[in-house]
Image (cartoon, rainbow, N blue to C red):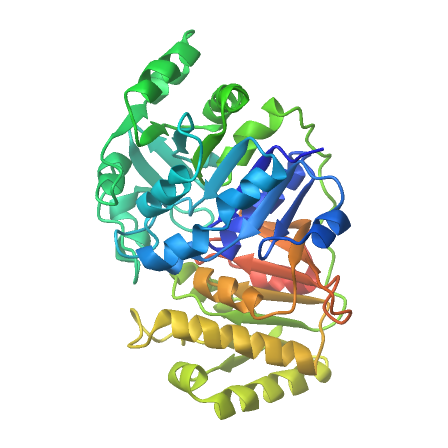
Length: 430
């Protein structure tokens, strides 16, 4: 049986959120860390959807095109019907870095000419809502909802600040100038399919769907699945895309999962996020020994990185939970350092720690840090193990390395999770 859907995650944290969304919706899913071999597909067993984790969100246009080149060949090889470009639910991107426009143009150019493009504008479960084309997002796990260009964090993002709330204008700057809107009143119309047909015919760059609440996702899903039966479909959006499609694909949601179990041994968390949400979580992580790493030294000095890894491994060996931070809480604003180089160094640090002290459970905070940290490990896939918090999945590692295979890892974006998130990795959830 061919999987019906392939999703590419533009960073690893978002890719694992989609993995969790698919699993809870009743879809058999596995997230691969690179295009899978035949042996890895066979080991995965029957799948309804396949994920491919990437890091396009942190790339310039030329690097994005190279990164996305294997995606459509894999889509064809799998025989899937829906290609989902999974992006951050806050749509933070820019013409020169993580361009959604570059991504969709690159993918669409390799797909059949009758392929249509849909963009799902919201993920209500995470407090992301799109109304008349304008994006709104909650601040933190239970904070106030702000228009995205007035959001206390995303409007000041150190790499891709959101200065425009109208997603049509935001994406036009990235090359999607012929984008149409299907506003939320139209979602309630009896002729929704005809409305979609007319709108899609007039919009070469795609159709943006408003999403006010989960009822809108329930209306959008059957429409997208019907379109996918006509021709391959390219869809951009957060994990709400899979949430919308799963019922239309015939999936039956799984029963409520058991609470997250306590860790079986010491936990290591690497925090590389600048966000206030992560800072609050670090402050609340009272079960951990906290290490404040020198970011420039970590990125540029292999000896310092090796010494830090040994120090962390020794603490873990003694039974301590360890939280290593590459950003001190007292620092305000972005550091004068290449963020990608620092994230890459964090990945090398994680690999060195695990080589010295294998672990049953670990966590990584920060989108770029998560992507590059997991890429540094000798792993080829992730499956869903449980929910840590909305938007944060605990995943089981698939690897040919016996010391790593079966271990658990949680990857979280800067905006995700309650203050006790790191404590949950140690003690489990209520």
